Length: 308
Image (cartoon, rainbow, N blue to C red; front, side, top):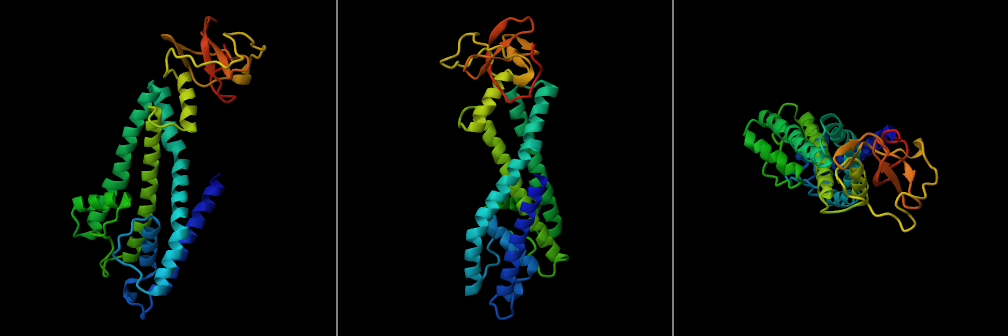
């Protein structure tokens, strides 16, 4: 998995470098109409704004060859960029969304809804701090003529891919370390858009939790939510061939362990009875005294507490 992620990152970096070198070769010659505005770092920043659809518009190709190159490059590069950033955000969902949310449930006793809402609020705050407020302070210092409000405005407009072009960084030719600054802005746009996509996917999970939209992933989490005690007292429908608690088939033991603790009635249960209800896809649930209290959907094998 890590090797695949590295290969994708290297391939995408190669796409950016290829575009930058191609535009620099076509537009950065003395014969080009705006050749003095192009260098490798400027071309890299330009193709980054091109592929991320930010598009400040302060520097554009003016030659016929440069415009033809941009047309072909965008047709290939924009879908690749969207797929790459979306896949990266999905990979980050585990360590940055799912694990913290489970930690709030297990360590602090939050319900599933409570943990999801709390985590989302915290994620919004961290995203604003890391991707807007802190970079804005850097832009405010490096640009000199920008106020801090201008810098915040630039960050928000850029990460929303609006790119009005009224404020563009690294435009002063005599600016110290200008080319390094332009490479840094390009990296900021890519990382920032990945963070925005992560926030958007987290918000989608929040919306699905409230039933506004539905998806296979949301349905799976809804089944897990029953085991976490977020749908107290509700019993799922059994299959046509299932019976109340019969047709157990003698299947006990650790082969069908289920998810975390189950809340039944007013008391938290610390174990479940993994008895398959005939053909229904559910397992019988009983409390620690051995009294059957209902049924719950089976989760994947090997998860959760041992059977009663």
